[in-house]
Image (cartoon, rainbow over all chains, first blue to last red; front, side, top):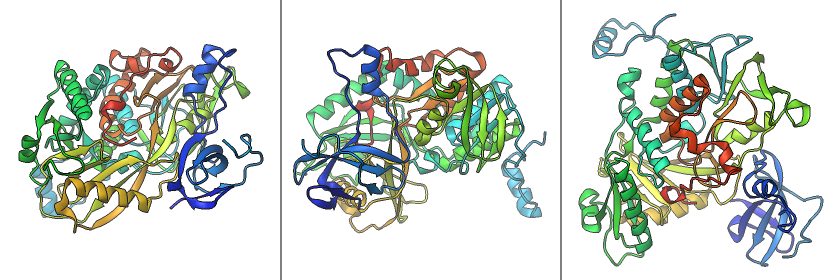
Length: 87
Length: 428
């Protein structure tokens, strides 16, 4: 079982979350280029190691940004929380 | 070059009587300073590519490198199911060629790969699923592939252990029946290609990790990336110069491409599988249920081999989970209530290199001399032979063969995706 530490609810089973993948900032659609948009849509760093990613906690119904090691599945506190811990 | 002992009934008899030992399938070598082609990843894809380079194109100065051992990744972790009942014409043509190569593999490699074409059933539990099965059957038939939709009664005749009662929570309305589909011994495929390639002069280097790909003249940092040209690889056993490097690293494809300065449209997600204790043979075909996220076949030894859905979280970890076994058991028991008392022997996981459109990425890249045969997701094993054949042709001739042209990396920048999710047996 994978334990995910929600900053609001504490550690919970990963089944209580929806995994949304590595954080992938969306370019502004009004002034982006087609190549930049395709890069956003398709290309993935697919890091083997620490990556920042977004999870949706079904208990508190908030998106949270966490750092996880994709090889060992360990979590650590992210240095900054770009979404401010709220959805 | 020493030819390997040919396997035959007579050979078996004489060696059985004389006690003479069989020679090793392949031998170990020191790393050369230079190769014509370096293949990263010694699974079925890398080995098949090396075999066809040597056999068809006469390119024998080839090294296949692996950070682990032969067939230790996806090639030894898949559920060994072969089929060609895909959804897109490009996919069907491609996988049918693979099935054709698998059919004659034992004779061609002089190695028994135990291919059993026992038939393949994809169950439909809803009208929508049945519609997709009809769609697949029609496209299959147009491509000359034997597939047809059968009703619940015929499903029951083909596989008596299935519960086809209309009162089940997920009633079986029908199925896509694909008679040429079946199962094979996946380790034998790896060993067969390794032995045949080694006999032609290809060198296999296990426990040889590629730590860097040497590229010059590229647009990215330290001369890597698009516009660059491959000059060699750095390994845990020293540097090798090579003008062609092929990425056959499956789940680790992104990390290998990154060494050459390329980012791929790939996410690595674990896929788990499990096997039961062996019992008397009762399951005559491969059974797949897309809606229930489960597929099952019975090996020649009598074990049931199960697969299910990819894990819900992207990772490079191959640890199994209890959730997987629980979900698998509850789903399979809805299809086959009779196996409730069977015991699971073990479970494992492999890494799937998933692409946005569920089709592979094959051919050249913006880095000259760097080829990819990646993005196989959950379809990799069944595509091994044809991928090797086509990648070898691509490398040797410098032109991308027609059969794999649709799967090029450029499709993601030119909006030509080849959507193959509708043919998935694995849940996503």
